[in-house]
Length: 232
Image (cartoon, rainbow, N blue to C red):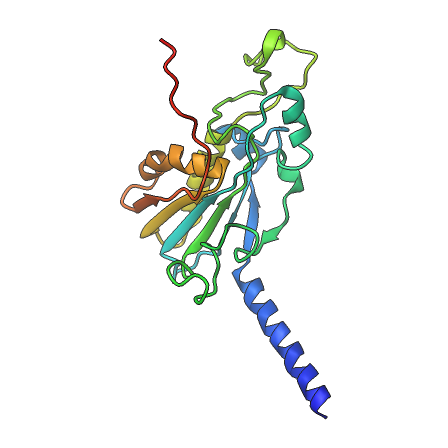
């Protein structure tokens, strides 16, 4: 009898935990082809950009964490083409993510014991699909290397052109996410790690421009910043 009761309690606990995790999942929103064209918001392989967001209702959330994914940068054409297989296409993204485990190093967790400061915050997660430190503003597929360089959108090259649109992806995601909210954000904390930490640093002022009237703070978690080089 004790064994049966213990098993039943364990299953009930697992079920309860699963329900909590499911309720906190953030779901993927892929840009339509028209939106991708308007915003020039694409992954390296040209697939429309995609992001993940908590559900928004009339009851909030009023405060949000925007977390930029990291993952270094691709520095050669071969490297960037290879990256498409893992982190350079929206086609590979899961339908939903668990903010406790899949998004950050804990700041998006929904457990108040683990994350007492931010567990009530909504989560907007921006996948890093461009390999360009979130800086690219190309509107057409591009080959930015060597004698085959061509970013004009005119003419051909024997190398596969790629989209470097990290900045465009950021702008598009913020605009589409904010327009879909039921209530205006009261405050937003922008963060990220590795290339995402650099992206948070680069885009803090831009985010404040895109969200007028909202308190915007930035707290990059980590990232590599090279020392300034005097080339004069």
